[in-house]
Length: 351
Image (cartoon, rainbow, N blue to C red):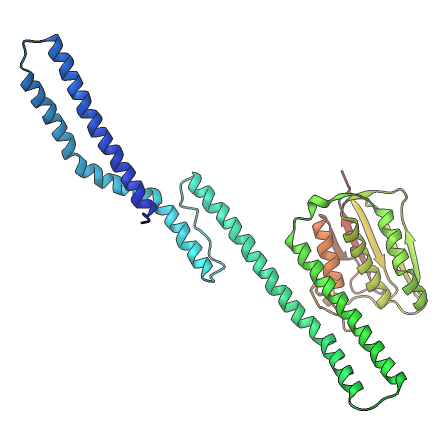
């Protein structure tokens, strides 16, 4: 049989009261015995009657003391009942509920409530990330999946030549590559939002990140006739971070710049120490730039600037901004409304 914590607390207080009455009676008896030994001619019966009277008075006091014990038990367990009630409501789906700690005494119970509130915040954040991930996936994966399905249905609608089948398969593979990239970016965003990445931080030379990104995107730039120029300080500064994430950050900026630069244009990567402190990465393209009204929206998921470009996943810049934030930095558009978009990323130097 289970007993509530409040009832157990009340029983413990009653036991203490009982022990107090018993110890008081024994004390009175011992005092009377010592007095009897010291004064053998006095009446022992009268002494025992005095002990019984004193003990009886104490027993009579048990009634108000018992009521006080019940009040104390309720007082002690009231915050715990509030904690349990709030946790039950949260479990029932009211995710915004939190334990009220303003009126709690500044003791272990308040520490417990604040710890649980922090745990509930983390749980609610995980649910929000899961909901956003599901929504993002449903929103962005629908188009390439539908495109591949339509291509397959059209290819099978009638007999075709080998070249036609090959063309359909190549198009489907292109959509599959796009789908894979979107999934990878969604998973990357989910991992970044989950945190717990700073334990992997290490000093990373910034020039190394720039050189690796340039090697990765040089073939694509050459295919477009775009000059990919890197201006770096060597050995230059180091940043505390994760190398593959920094490569992802800069790679997304370069990929975005290549897509918006005209054939024969220039994409410039710059890195070095910033005059106001920290280190900086900058990527400048020779495209039409970003209108003022889209200067902030471009960092939202799936946001696109209506410049005629198609096929973008809308995740590259948000992912780059999130990686910068994880590294304690900030990514921004330095020249909204001007030709040749310039994205600047500020990062703290490695200690």
